[in-house]
Image (spheres, rainbow, N blue to C red):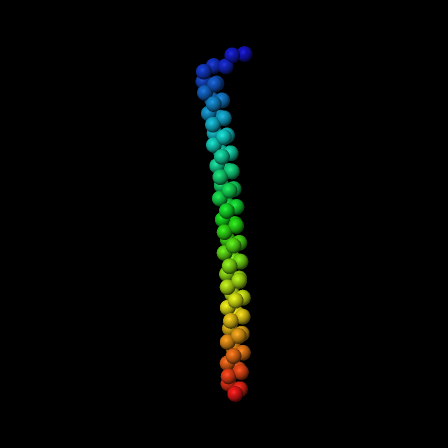
Length: 70
């Protein structure tokens, strides 16, 4: 069975659309994964800074208590 010119064009377009949508999904998933990694890193940095700030605050408070006791 021979395909007409319009059938060949339709098959070509269907292939192009399928490849385009697949490429979009792969690119989107890559971007989402990169954002997730960045957000996790940012959260880790913020948590570390918070912990270091609390440790510094405790050290200063202990220093004030020692100085005020003398």
